[in-house]
Length: 359
Length: 238
Image (cartoon, rainbow over all chains, first blue to last red; front, side):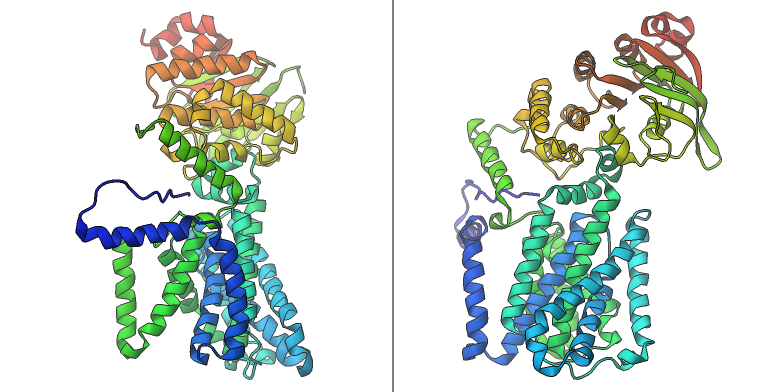
C-alpha cells in the first residue's frame, strides 16, 4: 500500500541522467508534506482568480472543471474497485441520479434568483439522492461477489437509464434542457478537495482497513470480527454519494442532460480512469483522471483517429505499467500521520540492518 | 441443555448441498483445555470449525458458555470471545503487520486493554514486533502463522479455534507454533485445535477426537489416543 520512493543509489549510465533527474524531482513532489497545504491554498486562490480575470480562456476553464468532476468520479469508484476489490461497472447510474435530482431542483423547484445561493445545497441533494440509491445497491453485495456483483451494477446502470427514459415529467428520453450554468471553478475545486479528503480519511480509518480486508480475504475479515455488511454498506453509500455530487456538477456545466449521457460508456470512461491511475491509490485516481481528460482534449485535432490513439496508449500503458500509473502506492503527503510514522520506522530499520535483505 | 462445558457441540451436521460433511457429531470442550480434532482430508474438521464460527449453516446445537450460537452472525461470535485462525492463515497481504493486528480489534472499545494486548502479542512473538510495519504478504510462512495467531489473541479470543496451524511449516516452526499454543493455553485461553499432524497435536492436547468421514471414530485423552493401536496405524504410521 505504501511505496517507498527512495531513489536507488546504484550507479546509472549518463544516458539515464535525465530520467534520474526527473525521478528525483518526482520523488521530491511525492514526499514533501508541505505540498499538500500549498496545493490547497494556491489552488483555491487560483480557482477564484482565474475566472474573474480571465487568466486562461473559457475552453481551458471548462476542461479544468471536467478534470475536477472526473477526479471526484474516479476517486469514488476507486473506493469500490480499488480498495474494496469489487468490480462496479455502474458508476454512471449514480451519477445520473445526482444529475437528475439536482437538475430538477434548479429547473423546476427553485426560483431563479436563488439558484446561485442554493447551488451547494442542490449539489448536496444530488449526492444524497445518489447515496440512497447506493444504499440499495449495496444490499446485493452482501451475498454476491466479484463478477456476479459486476453484473448487478451493470443491470443497475441500465435500470436507472430506462427508468429516466420512461418518466415524462423529467423529459423522458429528451432529457432536461436549459439548466443554468452554476458549476464554477471555485465550487468544482471545493467539491473535488472534499471528495479527496473524505475518501482518503475513510480509507485510512478503521473502517477503511475493514474495506481493504474485504479485498484481501473476506472470510478472514469476518473471522476477525469485522462487520463486513456494514463496511460494504458504508463504502457503497460514500462512493455513490460522491458520484452523485459529480453528476450534479456535471449537469450544471453541460447545461443539458439526457439518459443517453449516463449509459454504460460513461461508466466505462470512469473505469478507464481508475485503472489508468492505478487501483487502491488516491494519487493514482487524481493523476489518472487528469491524464485521461487532458489527453482526450489534446488528441481532439486528430478527429476520428482520437479513438484509435487513445486506446492504443492505454494498451501500451497497461503493458509497461500493469498496475496503472500509481497502483497501490501513494504520494506521501496524501497519507495521514500514522502511516508516515510507519515509513520512518521502516527506513530507520533498513539503515540499522544496513541493507541486509529481510524476510 | 448446558452441561458445564465451555463449548458444547450436540448432534452437529453440516452439509454442502447433498454431501454431508459432518454427521451428527457431539463433543465438549471444558474451560482451559486444549482439545484437538484430528483426521484425514475431508473428515469434516474444518467444516466443524466453520460452523462454530458462524461461517456455515448447520443443524444441531452449538453452545458457548451456555448460550446458543444459532443464527448469530460471524462477527458477533467473534465479539463473544471465539476467535478462529482460518486455514491458510488469511493474512491481509497489502496491510502492514500492525494493521493486521489492529483489524482484529475492530469491535473492541477498550483502548487501554488493546494497548496491553499489543504488548502481550509482541511478547509472545518478538518476530512480529520486528516486522510490525512490514506488509503481511511479505512475511514468511511461519511469520504469517504467528501473525494469524496474534490476530486471534488481539480479538480477545477466550477460546481460539486453530485450523491446521502447522500447514506448510518446517518441523522447527511447527514445534515453535505448538509451544506458543501451550503458552497461550497456560495463560487461560481455551484451544480447539484441528490438525493433520496427529502426532504433535495429540502430544499438545489434553483430549482428542478422531474424525472419520464426518463422524467421531474414537475419542480419549491425548496420551490414550497416541498409544491407541488403531489411531497409530491410521494416522501415526504404525
